[in-house]
Figure 1 (cartoon, rainbow, N blue to C red):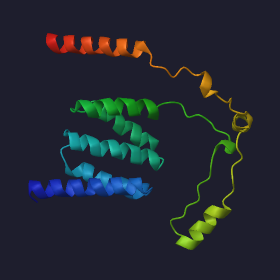
Figure 2: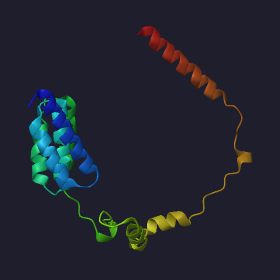
Figure 3: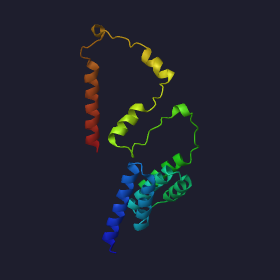
Figure 4: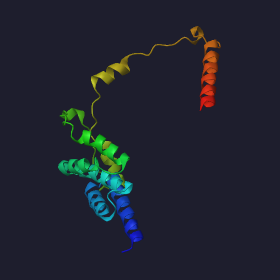
Length: 177
């Protein structure tokens, strides 16, 4: 296989992995991204990008240990941007998991296997989550009316002074550079 066809296959697998991930097909995304990861130069920027997507795909399928291990490797990647992203993502992956109460979650029905009519019906019959009491209270408060006749709409000289000073500062910066 020539290097060009290897690069094309790498890009093809990478795009297929991203496409699958963006559609919620995380297992397929892992397969494509693992294949792409094995095809290219792992030290290149594209190799780092492929492996960063693989980290997120691992986490999405519940393989957090693999995601953390790969992310730790990426913190030593030759590409600076990849290292930065990996360090930030590693902090998120290693953060303690917070517990949430069931009423804080919203169930999203899987509509992939339904036809359009059944999908619309499923959405219409999906259980509604109650709004929190804080949002009810905030919507119940009347907004104060503003009397525009009392607002000073005349030209303010401060604006012209500020614009003038800004212009002088910009001109001096251009002149000094």
